[in-house]
Length: 64
Image (tube, rainbow, N blue to C red; front, side, top):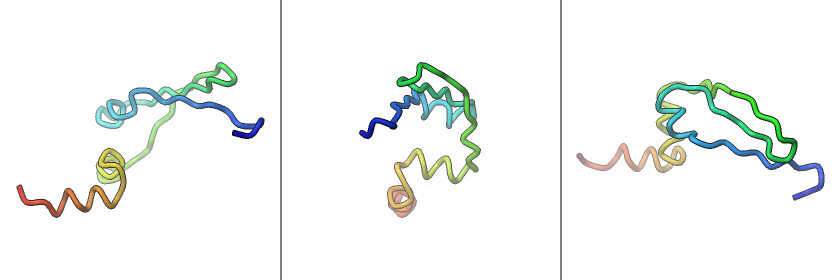
């Protein structure tokens, strides 16, 4: 990492996305925190939780 880089933590993202709650973001470098809304549609949330569009598409193609 360069010296202008910050270390950012986002814990509990999966639960926040599933519950449509705000995501707590912590800048560990500066010691600051704030809440953010992912602003994703239902489909975008499914794709994100699947690990990306390719994984999502593969899961959609599987029988059952």
